Length: 231
Image 1: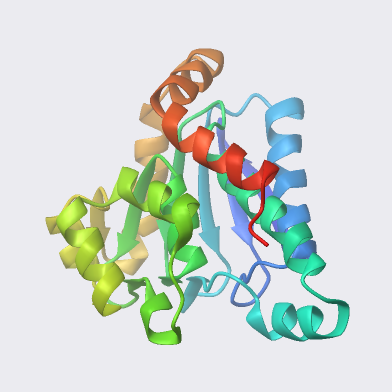
Image 2 (image 1 turned 90 degrees about the horizontal axis):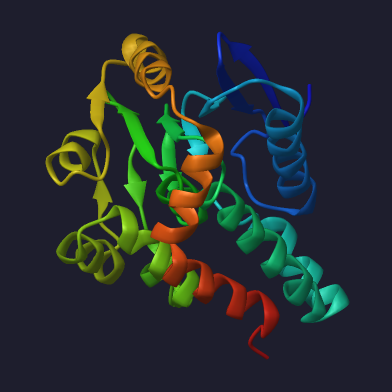
């Protein structure tokens, strides 16, 4: 089974993340980008829905079990190579030339939450699963890129609460604060996400240009971080 794969449902590309907890490492990021390339270049899809094959976890973010030993073994240049790849995926999703919908059928923690925030819209199962920014509990800041991405999707007052407390938000709370479009019973999640995606029958080139205009400030932050990584 591929780490990331897709199928077409009418003109909606349904992307399935198949890498367990869908943690970010080089193979996962590469596979995701390759699927996005294929959908954009070789299909007539005009909307994108992303889900996980794991019904407990949508994405748990950075694969620290891989990254920390790699840094210890190979040095900080591993992070200098990894960070642009991770930020590059976020940038790609932010500017993807069709509406993107995260169908959160499980937890979205840390980097997984930011990947969800990079999508245009979010639907979430109502019975279980959280969105959480746990970095405060492991003595990490979010950095300018993740902060900028989060603030496009989360009201500032709620973002500050999530950031400073590490609070886990339920689907109901996310819906109340407009972080997601809708909290759905698990059996209805994909139907709701797909129905919404099908309703967005828009010109992809136009959507792509709109996204670049809308996210200009965020893209500047990402591009600066990629060009001048911290040392």
